[in-house]
Image 1 (tube, rainbow, N blue to C red):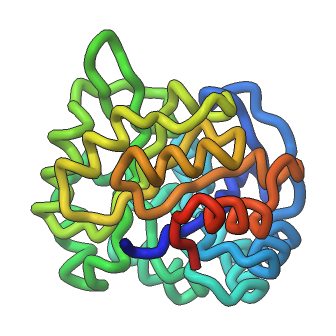
Image 2: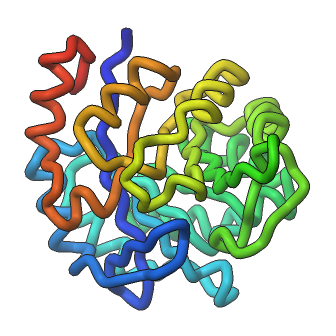
Length: 250
């Protein structure tokens, strides 16, 4: 079994790290550069930086902040928010990111996935999927979770794989910020549908939630925000717990 990845997420708004519940009720969680440095020191395997209002505000990701975060860490670093072109990706990689996350722009123009994979390599292209269960179906949402589509999540990740995406960051909007556990059903279904690394996101509240998502789905990574930001869980504590449960971690 491949070693599982523990990935803190910095949701950025107006230069600060923030966190909400179900994509609403946003509150401050600290300075992103300080948090990033602390997570790298604690042993995080990767870091995700999401400029959560860039797409809604029709602007690009804050490059100066990306540069500061990149300079403070020595672990793989994914940046998302407002990315819609080869030029955007070039600028973000030049600022120090290793990978980029695309969501709304890929839904609007699926060929973007292929274009970016051809230019930068599939390993650089992370498909970020914000999904919500509506009735019996999991559907894709865009524009920072504010706009529903009729696209079915499973069909979308399959298409993204065909087009060259290298990884899927799957966030359950139903579970986001609730601390009630990850969305095991859709995470399992997505991981069974594609041969891509899956990062589970949304709902982490305890060490055991991480054990369950790794044991009960094919997720190779698990992402969390508020439980790390507010000190409810620590990365060393989580890794020690997972090792005790015979789950391989880095």
